[in-house]
Amino acid sequence: MFRSTFQSGILSILYSMGTKPLQLWDKKVRNGHIKRISDDEIQSLVLEILGTDVRTIYITCPADPEIPLGIKLPYFVLIIKNLKKHFTFEIQVLDDRNVRRRFRTSNFQTVTRIKPYICTMPLRLEESWNQIQINLPDFVRKTYGTNYVETLRVQIHGNCRIRRIYFSDRIYAEDELPLEFKLFKPIHKCEKKEITD
Image 1 (tube, rainbow, N blue to C red):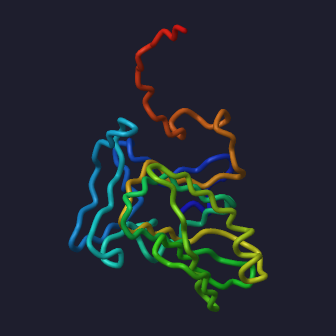
Image 2: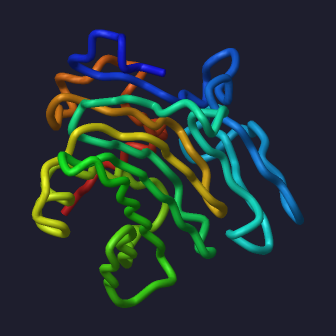
């Protein structure tokens, strides 16, 4: 999908405020919903994935299972809201031994398990909005002793709200990011009180 594209800086694969946020994605929904809603906390449109079973509600990129993403950028960034329910996501990569490896992270798992083709890991989310940053070459090297080549697929399961998903060539400081990549929380006006002794 992106193999023949020049890749540097930041490459977004989902933006909740875009005209077609799921343009590159396939979705599977059973006993739940995937829809764009307004999040009161950040006063912005977000994509909500909500269901009774994380195995039966998810989005996958690319939409065509025969076409790999082909993203070589090393950092994966996911901006999501913790809904205090089970949540999991998975990234499939290709390493320099031409082996497809999957990294699955979930907030309901407590132990890391490494098998030849899949590594499952626990995820601890903060209250409200989270920015998850994954150094993919580091994960591949530490887990399998091989080198990261590219990302093939991304799958996000319920239950969460998504603001943006992107890849980057490095971790960017907040002031280096373009405005549409920042997560703004509205500033509430508060009363000024005069303090007297």
